[in-house]
Image (cartoon, rainbow, N blue to C red; front, side, top):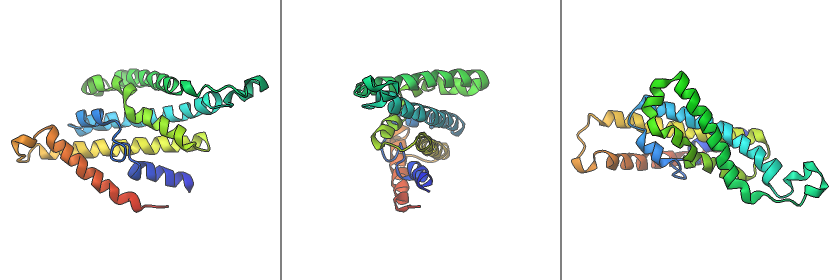
Length: 204
């Protein structure tokens, strides 16, 4: 039940976009088309599901103070936590290369439509933010970290697909010239953020 609560909370309450404003550049730039937004959302979800557990294991068995005690008593005082940010980014960059090559091979149309934003997943702050939140919250197990990654990814996916669907609809609306483009997108994002605040009363 605790993991289910974490999963639901990471989707609706601690949403990466609406609660922490992470991954906003990709969120705003790739949300013009539902199909493209869904493809990027799936890629980001996959990245979070893969990298957060990997970074959890890296943090627990390599980086934390005393994490290397499994190598012997002489390593129990070793603290490599200062390398955390660099190694987290290295894991994310490696996983991004895997995702980019997979999408290019099996979905070339999606690869072309995403353009530069697919390799930019490596610097998507939602993915690095997920790893840092995992470290900060000190999850009890790798499975809990995986659940958190899945929930965070699905939350980001819902946010970008929802915005893309609205932007497709308003393309036929009579928007004041001064608000067309990014202006009305910011307003919609703010309203969606307020809507997601209504989930704050959820407790499983």
